[in-house]
Length: 144
Length: 80
Image (cartoon, rainbow over all chains, first blue to last red; front, side, top):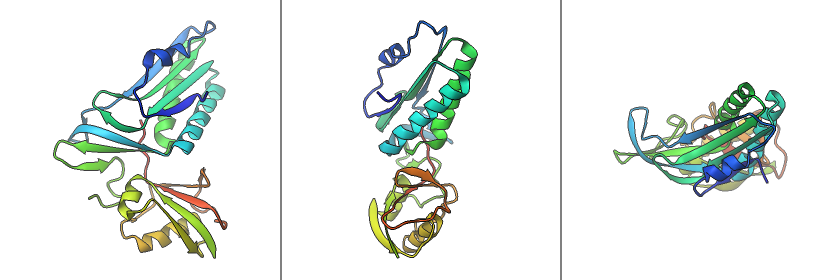
């Protein structure tokens, strides 16, 4: 099973956490990214993730291997959603288990930061005023 | 001339109105190919913040292109 996965369905957080249980670990850190109802002054109603799955999975697994190597943690997993999302849905989850908490916090932060910067995933926000926009992309192409 | 398969994602796909195309090109690098495509699609203005992948591996913009390559143009990513 891939340590990093993409899914179009809701993420089962309890099952996700269970996979990382480890008797040699005294610390577990989990980051959940939620769908927020505003961005840059606009009221957000829902959003949509477009994911280029072959590379997102490959790059996500690479990031997890880097974190294990770099921070000496025992286990790490991540899941990112694709498709349409409603407010407060969990869009992304990262979990890290480790003998001690400092490495678990550091590795979790590293993984989510790298996921946001490197994975081929794009977010389209749908606003209360009827407009929709690709995030981070106001200047890369005219919007309709 | 190389035959290259080009794929556009997200904002780039919406701007060009196409997802994939085959081009015969003299462009030597990914950056030159992007400029060539931007010449055909006014909507593709700048790749400065974008990323490029060749054959499903992230790449530098100055990477040399080979016949049969698949070049993926990624607008700025926004996961998480």
